[in-house]
Image (cartoon, rainbow, N blue to C red; front, side):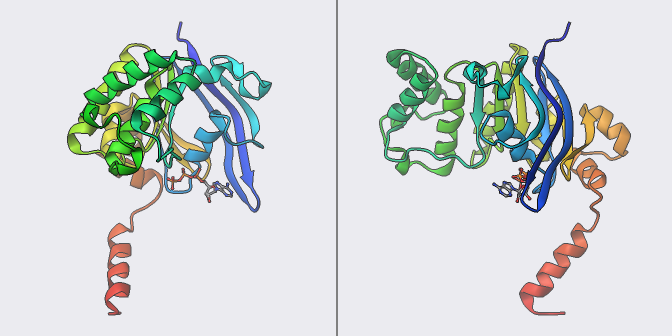
Length: 260
Ligand SMILES: Nc1ncnc2c1ncn2[C@@H]1O[C@H](COP(=O)(O)OP(=O)(O)OP(=O)(O)O)[C@@H](O)[C@H]1O
C-alpha cells in the first residue's frame, strides 16, 4: 500500500484583506516528486511555510508523517529538509561553521556533521572554500550551501522553493539527477519552481495552484491530455488563462521607448 507522507485537508489562509489559500486538498505519497507550480502570488510559498510550521493562523488540517503539525510535537521536523526561496544565511560564518551548526541543530554529532558537509560540498566543487566566509560566495555558491544544509540530516521529505536559482547549467544537471535518485530511494520531494522545463522533467506529479486553489493535479502526460498543449509552459499558459504575452511585451516596449 502507498505510504501517505503529507496530507493537506481543506487548507485556508488569509492575510488582512486577502484570501491566499482557498481550500487546498492534497495527499502526497512516499517517493513522489511533486512539482508545485502557479502564477506569482498564487500561494505556493505560503503553502510551503505553513507545512514547515513557519506560518500560523491557517484553517484546515496539515498532517506530515501522519502527525497533525498543530499538535505542538515538532519531531516531524527532524525528517524534513527545506531550501527556502529567500534564505537568511549567517554570512560571517564559514561554510564549515554554518553547515556544522545546522547539522548539530538536526542532532548530528559535530565531527560527523563537518565530515558530511565537506563531502557534499566537494561534490559541488566547493571543497576548496569550505573554510571561507559565506559573505565571499557567489549566488550559486550560497545556493549550494543551502541545498547541502537541507540534506545533512538525511531527511525523508524535502521542500524546495526555487532551488536552482543562481546555479550554472552543470550544477542544475547534478541537482536534477540527485532529486531523481533521492526519490528512487523513497524520499518525497515537494518542488516549487517557475522553471517549467525542469518541473516537466523531474516531477512525476504536477500540482498547479491558481488563486489559492488547485487548478490541475496529475502527471505531465495527464495534464497534456487535459490541456491539449505540448509543453508544460504552454499548459501553464492555457490553464491560467494567459494568452497575451506578445501583446503585453509590446506594450512594455512602447512604454519604455515612449512610442505609443
Ligand atoms: N506575510 C504576509 N502578509 C501579507 N500578505 C502576504 C504575506 N505573505 C504572503 N502574502 C501574500 O500572499 C499571496 C501569496 O504569496 P506567496 O508568496 O505564497 O505566493 P507564491 O505563489 O509563492 O508567489 P511567487 O511565485 O511570486 O513566489 C501574495 O498576494 C502575497 O502578497
